[in-house]
Length: 307
Image 1 (cartoon, rainbow, N blue to C red):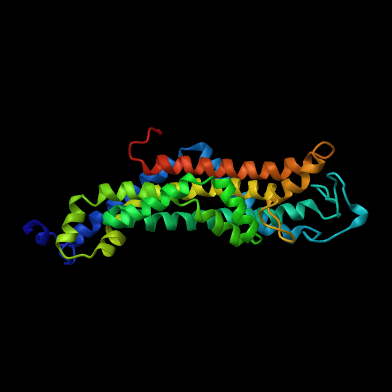
Image 2 (image 1 turned 90 degrees about the horizontal axis):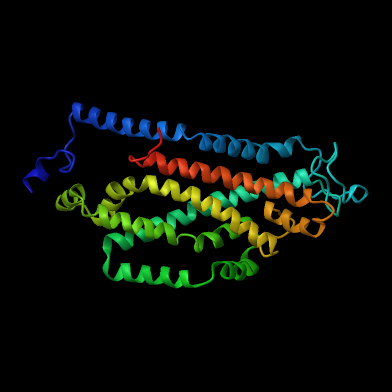
């Protein structure tokens, strides 16, 4: 106990200038090392550039397209790629470039929203389960085990059919069954971290459980949470595209890349571009996100083998 009281940080006293500078330099050094490891991952840099270019195209591109994504033109219907319609047109004459840009917006929005929400739920559930143990741990693990026994795609299809007509609703539905892995990862880390000396010192100094979780445990989980966000974003894109392909996802007049693939499957033999173009965009997004996730996992791992 004497050691805890003498520690100015634990006891609540202001650290000296030298100690503050040392902590800042250590934090900066760790951050710099992580950035250096990430920067040396060439595929991650390529993935980052591709993702930024695609996101910019999805949000800025519609301002430079001559046609609206809902604009119907029967005269130009069912055309292949041309100068006026680079991606061609659908059976109603709607410009597929405009629709691909619109669909990319919604697909990325669903992916980001789902990843952040699912990771947040997993963080809360995993932290409570790991720190408090006992009844809370048993109840949360029971919920996780029940959800893991259910076929995810069937559950998503049922929920998507009832509630998934809008992009935000679809993101929430996917997030509600995607937080399980994050929760287990966080639980395992918290079970280990809560026995560390600095956590024990904080508890002895009178810090409450939620303060300990917020100030001492969560900062040490940032690395795995960032990796989990990228993994969940890629998973969300795949799940959304699958549901839209089954006509159980976002419904017209809104569209996603998965919806465009579903709409083009009937013309795959005569106009494969209707499937290959949105499918290629989905593939590019998923690969970019996965490359970034791999690099982030290596960057936050001090034992990374990247040179």
